[in-house]
Image (cartoon, rainbow, N blue to C red; front, side, top):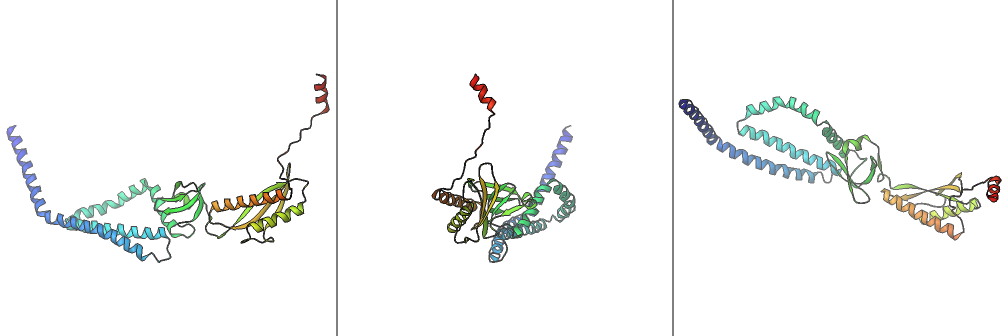
Length: 293
């Protein structure tokens, strides 16, 4: 028993001595590999900044510029890792890694297909012109200003200053309403007037009021006024006009301004906007029974 223990201890010490000798022999290569690794990290950051500066005056979107700079940084790091494996004389390990990369890539692709889909969608969104930094968009029932587009999400800032992170895949696959692609937006205001009103006078008054309130974009002829229907308690109409707008908030402000101006004009000219009225018709027998009681 003592002989076996001593033999096992001797083999372990021999193995440790062999490892120590290998470590001492490889120590210069390890030091060089560490220095190369630090240099590669520095170069990846430095080249990423240089690429970003070179692309600054290009016509690419800001998100695409950041994406290209990050890809350059990643490629430099990968090149450095292969160089380090060569310095450490781990070429066999490198071959093993490359041989298993196919199987591992398939497994990782199946496990991360959602993330990969978002990454691919992020690249597409960074390249197209329909959405870019600073645009006011509406997508997936959320609305706000685009403040970031990365490889995972599109970040929008809502009018209440809250941030919403939308997965790139959902943004790319669903309709996007971009308020910033056109300099002008048509505003539609609905209202109703009493049946006793002079319809021609009301039409002329509303068109004059709106054209004066937004005279930089509308003349009286350009304001569209349409009577829509005979409502339960009013004759309803619709007014359409143009305003400068690059966000839904500007649209809401312009609509509020138009409502205030139209209401003031109606009050000045004694034009009534009626409340909903419901007429109740009771049969005569109802009152006769109540009188008898």
